[in-house]
Length: 295
Image 1: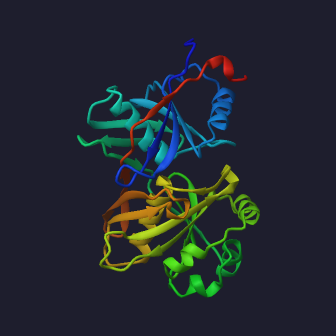
Image 2: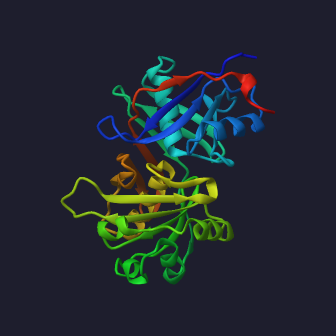
């Protein structure tokens, strides 16, 4: 057993090497128990921490923990993990596979260090009543209804409730009732509420977003890769126009502006592929002794 854990913190989905969403990354985690992983994730305190170990099915097994529980998949922690491996010279640019709770998923690293990850194919779940959702966010039903788009559960690894609002002004004034959202997510077996507003057609940005996941110990997140895949799938189906490439902005309300690229691969009416990607900043290694972690 190694005395020291190889632990990094890296910001994923940075915009111009700033902002992004911090993730913990533990590279030598094969000997850690789930209890130890959960303890480390709680101590690091980031929205997700990834634990990397060998896999018999893929290049790596990656497990993801929030401060409160394990989740099947995390987009920004995947970007962070493979950025750490790339920037530390452990991986070259190329294509890889990761074993996750959401399945065996592909990850590619460009020569410039942009990490793009395959996500699970979208699953469209329940449509929710606007009258139930609007009070959770401190907005009116009309702020949602005027978009003409549904409030829908969508998953490309984690189940998000996708909520459209009319414009950026409404998005900025969203005031989440975190206790009510947590209760609603638990009752509806969903993980988060992902609110977005479409941007003007001439903008390079497809939509601006905010994500709330108090059930997972995350009040608001500055970049959510799994939700970006779900939103891209949702827009491809409900917005029309045959779009399949998107750029999402998130985190401005937290002063951590993030940029997330997302694309869907259509085959007629079906989506046969979802990919999400972005850049990370320079990973910072932090000292961490295994003795500090309680069993």
